[in-house]
Length: 275
Image: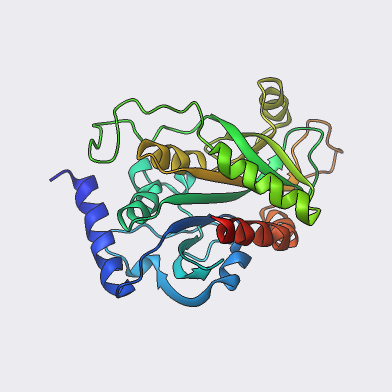
């Protein structure tokens, strides 16, 4: 058996036993400092990644490293309280393993969130940006022998982020008076923050926000035909006109993400209620 398939199966079998009949309908990935949504999940069952066979452990700032299974918006959800990053030293098979395990458990939709730097001059700290498309500078998780049981060798990425879910988010935001931006997310490897010249380059090629995650998860989900909704919390203004004493700080990113988390939490909960 392909070791990737075996790893997915072993993790999914373990979780199936622990879930004791619960059937997750929706998967959620909570990025840096965005764990507040987990507090909204009713009747939660917390499963640390370290307890799951063959599972990587999240080491990033603000990532607790748990699956949380419970009820949100009237639906059974499985949420990743912290994701796995390429910059932590994990191969792409492990970066997307949690997504493939959630799909094995039966999720029909995936919500992904992240903290990102606002490359566009129109984005400011605390803004919420719906991801309409992305530009990928990370290794593609589909490189290598194709897992045919998951999806095709060459999956279509014309609409990586589901138009119907984006419309639903916009409708809810309009009703609730939430200022919701929309843009293109650029994904890089990290862990160093980008240089001012790189920020300028990303803006010139059509990027609006930049981060170090998300895109591999989206590719893995779309490979298997799972619709995706993505949203970024803008935690710093990633411009190329800094003051001489400016520095990017990981703790500041988490603080800014926490401040915007209430808006994002309400939006995602309402979206799930209406699905």
